[in-house]
Image (cartoon, rainbow, N blue to C red; front, side, top):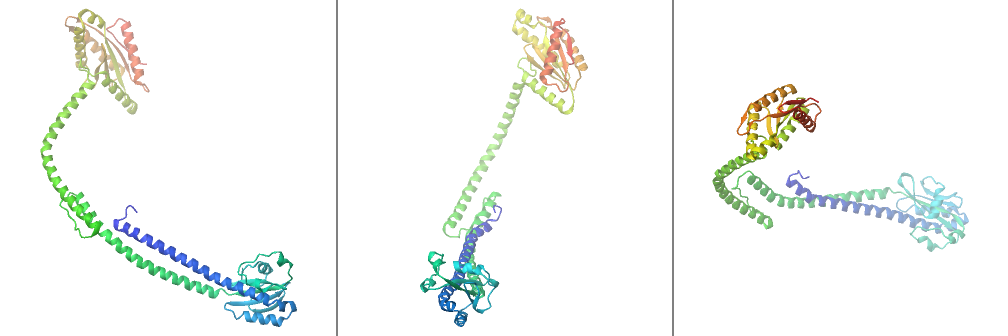
Length: 442
């Protein structure tokens, strides 16, 4: 329903209560009317049988069938009477008129308890017992009688049965239902016309407003709608036009301001990009050596590790430690030591491939990441770097050497396992005399 057009939703909301109330009213009238018609037929049958029972006492007691037959024939003159039967206490027929349904033993029990039984073709059978000496005033009780102790003391002479046809009642009910439905349809039609008129009075102004909103949404700020609906809707239409005028004026002012701001925004954006670039460099670069810092190296290691897991490639790493670097700081001072670090960083940067990554791991340690390189190639490159460092003459310090611990990625290695192997290889190089390249393959 949410996706329906506005006019259809309002129309449904206007018509639904009308239809529901009309249907409920028609159902209520039909149910009450049918109940009354059925009740009237049953009440008439009960009255006739309870009048007939005491009237049949003499004939049943004396066995005068002529009297009983006359009684049955007189009752047959009643409307809808289909058959009348008078029996003795043993359910033997004493008099009968009309065409009765079959008499069953249950009829006697129903007559004693004042119950109504359905006969053939929808007819209703009413029964009443004939007692000797029972007061005739009790026969006019329209309510169902419950046998009591007094009834059990009376002598039962027989029963009277009246079968009434329900055909006329059925026709009356059909006519009543038809008339009720017709009246309901006419009432529903009139109410629907009024509801549709009310719906149109609401939907037309709202449709104009909706069209105006869509045009404004497309950028047509000069849109105005007719304000002629009257009442609150006209105030709403006038309010829309005032809002459109203010919005159009504001848009013009904003466009003028935007024209002046565009150049300023471009300049500020360029400045921000430059600052972001500088911040990125600062966050990933060692300030002393201008190499990658440890944070950047860890990120590169993780990228290479993930690439190896996904594509089955391999890479190698080398931890580089400057031999006896503490003596440099103790002998010449930290400034000279920093110059040695900068010099070695420059050697490493200039002697590795462009695809490899070099960074300061911490203190006098450096880390080299050899991309797409096996252990043998990594060892060869590390040896070249060791020689370049050993052959360099540092100011004040002279010759300095470095030890290398090399390893390569082995599936399913983690980064921590690789670093442990490389660190163990570096320890072995230090223990074996320094200025060496050692590797651990596993």
